Image (cartoon, rainbow, N blue to C red; front, top):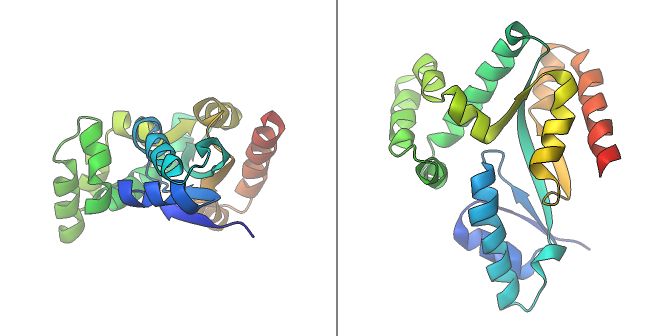
Length: 187
């Protein structure tokens, strides 16, 4: 039986490298985090246990803001920024902003969360920050962008918040299905 572990911080990432068959990456991640924190941490843990880190599956949820026009992407971008602001207000994830040069952002997001100022928290997650943590694309480009970003790293991708969008617009499942088939075909 395979065992997967969810991990974000350095200790749990090393533990995953030592003992797990797979690691579930947190949806709030940048490629900088994947390359400079996750993969080296898994390798360190695997080396401690005499394991090959390449055999550890990386299961990665991806925050996606899709729409064919800028107008169609407004709501998905708002949802993605809200998600990042929520997670980003948590101390355990603050280092990711710091790593990317957004020092102090976690404290600002925490203050917004405490005061209920979601508009300000969304504004703090700039388009530049959003692009570092999410795939923002036209529907026809989503699969390609996901493949490009995670090829050679992910064993599986999970479209984060897809079930939420199903509740917003049931027809959207067809779009997510197209994305999933395109990603699977490229694997």
